[in-house]
Length: 241
Length: 241
Image (cartoon, rainbow over all chains, first blue to last red; front, side, top):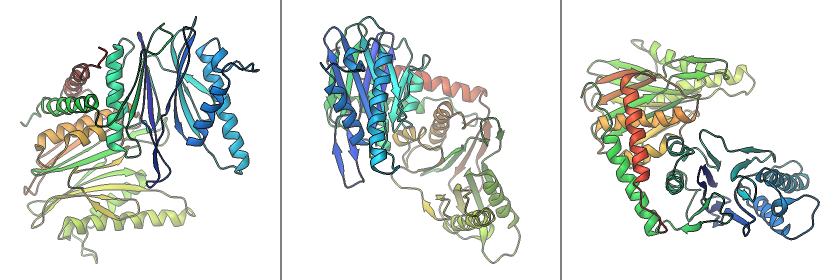
């Protein structure tokens, strides 16, 4: 299982993902699921992946190989909009999945992606690319997208994330969302990758990795635990109290 | 979809459930999923149900009909322990499900239950009764059980609920867990039923229903939203800030 999420605010984009993969509880490995594609001052993409590892690795590999090549489809490195790039990710993903489907007589190997970033001349944006290859833009009122083990980490995003949320606060909230998920599902695990993109920069502002015992991540968890403990105790009294 | 949960603390038990059921988005109804079985000063049970409505209604009906009857199995009204009562719920549930299974050539109609309460001479306890009819006791370190749409409301319980949590604080936390779930899944909806049992009372201390616009529930939601907003902003700064 994986958990990845991305947030779009007025100031930019935040991406976060766990990095645990497993084929059964006795076969657990670490792989980054946050992939960067950048051409300085021209385009920056972050691709988060979830699902079958061979599919996501194959998709990332194929996308990377398009760099500098003259291809029929414009791909990530020559697309004029993020929308076009997202559709291309869906196209490549379906191609990889369909190959496996044929080789395996109908057995499915699925993957989902979040593609975010900015192409010069276009606005920053986020797209969710479904296993079917189709893509949707991030919603306007609750401007975040999730892939993989979505449910545990959704309430904190629902309550906090808005378009006018400060970019660093959105990044803190993304880490909490991941922490909640890692506590509740062992198949989602550290380290956590975080990337922050400021609108119109055309390069990533920050790309960091936090181990479970990194001082910052521990402080964050402790601070939030204290907030929850006090916050529940401060809720209104029942009428019988 | 349903969401029900129960918490066991040193002081007693808390039960909470939503009351929305639906067979498709255009067929939504209200049914209480919190069922009480009480014999004053002798035994008190609360049964939370999730799953196929015809199964849960049939199980509750059959359990109620055992009251005062001389039956081979001791049932809820003559069991000597909560464990025995929980196994009986599993037995009745399997019977109802198996009948349907036979009539429908293998099509499954499933239901899960949480049974909690106390029989005089036994300690208060909680059991989760699986669709298969088997039952497990509430865990010791994170003393809560959930049925139905469990994931959205789990992180707040993981972070807050311990054996020494005050009973009313546990009840507040249960309402938050429900609120998080109702925000994230439209199929889980108000009103919310809440029951509180104090250890060794052998009758329920409180059994209340909150509509979505009840002043208490609205205050609770507002208080928690304020806590979350401030709490995320108060998290540690990144090293680049």
